[in-house]
Image (tube, rainbow, N blue to C red; front, side, top):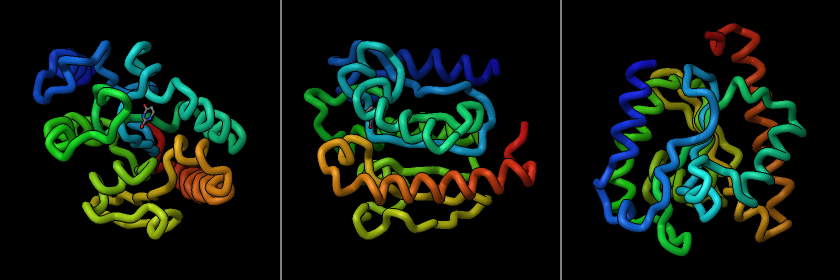
Length: 193
Ligand code: URA
């Protein structure tokens, strides 16, 4: 726990890229910082997240929460983070340099949280975590197995789902798959801490 506190202090003071100049808050994530079986990773804070200092608390977050509640995800079983921890101006996609600068913070979070499942929310997360050339429309809904017992599920970003109603069904089906795998893990006791 002390380590996590040190991580938060260091992250709050981060000036590794230009985004620190325009941020209001560093957005570390959302959830209880402990070992949990499921980690969601989005792109980066938007306006509301920058103001409130918490991940996915704006419109996209409300949609995500609605779905997580509808599928009975237990908030004790997941943590939500982002590829970059400071808001890119006008919500533009973070640059490669900004992502590179910020990724060590996410790597620390992954080590601390030790998830069995990682959900990439949208193409920025999929490109940073799975493959630089990842196409979310091709990869979404497919499990990618990684060394160290980590299953990755790429799916749409909830903002994309808000913009395009046709993505709703697939987003729902992908999250349902995640919930089924999560239930298996929790029941097996792998996710209990
Ligand atoms: N979009 C993201 O990718 N992350 C957030 O925290 C909010 C919106």
